[in-house]
Length: 195
Length: 265
Image 1 (cartoon, chains in turn red, orange):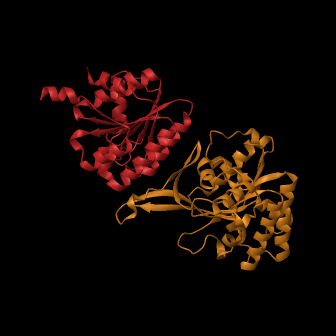
Image 2: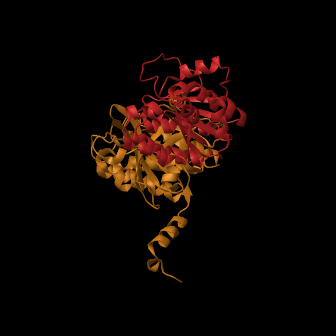
């Protein structure tokens, strides 16, 4: 089973309003994105809110264009481009948050996008908890996740929180266990077999 | 029959909540903070420094009122309404027909000053205050206004020499509007370095409610905040919220505390 189909299958088995911690390796990153956006959300006809604090939204958009994944129902909350002083011109589906430390503003932008598409079920992707942990301490990050996930549950939205295994700490693992209903360990069995 | 005084506190609170009819602002977060909205007829001070969203809150309050069939009036003191309308947030739910139908009206106070012949006056006398309040009350009657905004009280207060005159203006205005079942927001330009929430600290004592908007600097980030300090006639949250001014309306989320320890945020 490929990473793309594995993630789509596992997410499809979950009920709406589920919060999922997705533990993956960096080499699985783009396959995981494709699996979620194309194979899972595309088939379920979900509105996608993609929060990126890892790489600029423009880089993800380029990758999606290469993969021929349509952007019509994908919206970005970009927490990294502004702080990197990236080009002022932004994709019409991307909203900037000034800095990954402005966690409240991040929640507000997600809320804004959900309100604009209230009639559709949403998938909210948080990419990633590790990059947010670079800019925020554990206490504020736990508080943020707790409020965000519960708010998304009340909207009936799926939440997927990326956690890159190479950069995980015990604090991050504990935080994810606390807020998520399910942990998906991507390609875990394949890796174990390879080892 | 059980006397109110004999009721358990929680039941008593529920009863009070039921007794006061609410004027839902239509701003979901604020209505949530106020347990359903502003008690109808209350005069509420919206105090805050520049760029914190006071005017946007007021306009959204009026637009939602107009949409729900309540005639709404905005009295502008500092900025001509034509300029104000050009710069206001293009709310998704705003419909220009509300203005054409007379549900939503904008009036320039300087035009009223001129009409009353007091536009040249640096300071208003007691009689002129009475005349001004009566004129506003006349507009409220004429247009059957249920939601009223004065933006800003501070600008009017600069023409009121002392505390007594400010007090007189507010008491008279609040009493008349409340008697007409009109819920009012009075904008106060408040400098956070000064004590109180209005010029000479009079308005916050008289107003039924005080909602404070602010700028909170945290590690170099500037967040817009909102906090309800006082609201007569309802229990309410006194927590600080972070707000965003969007085309879908004003959105609120709780301010994160980061464990409330030094360096936690």
